Length: 140
Image (cartoon, rainbow, N blue to C red; front, side, top):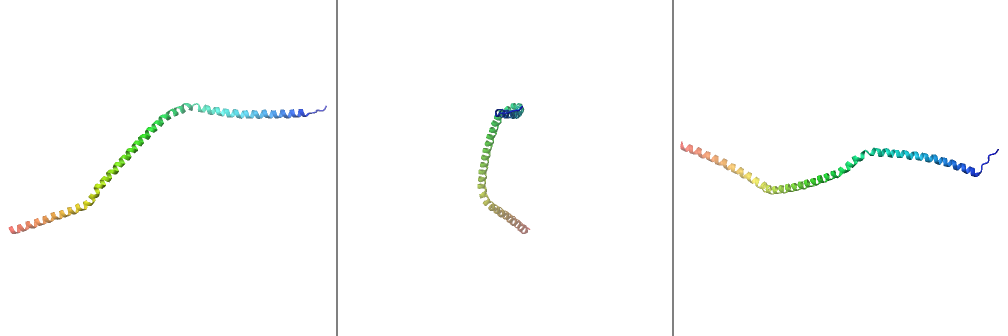
């Protein structure tokens, strides 16, 4: 008894082996896809509790943004007021300097005049004492 194989039988055998390999490969690929899908499902399940929090954050973002804008406007107003105050202070310093500069020139003259008047007062007192001593000497 001899077994004879024809080319059709050989080709059919190779085709069955390739089909079996393709089915095994398909099962492996489907197993990996199933693993990825389960990971995605776990990720989705972990995100579900966060959805209400995220919604609240998004809702509060508008209020926070409005509050931030109000704060920025207040800061701008304060900045403008600070600039105005600094400008007024600068003008006041310039006016004060305009008044003080001539006083710096006059001050030494006033000091000298005060010293001269003090000297005159001392001399008058000395002269008055001398005159008083002379009168006492003449009167006795």
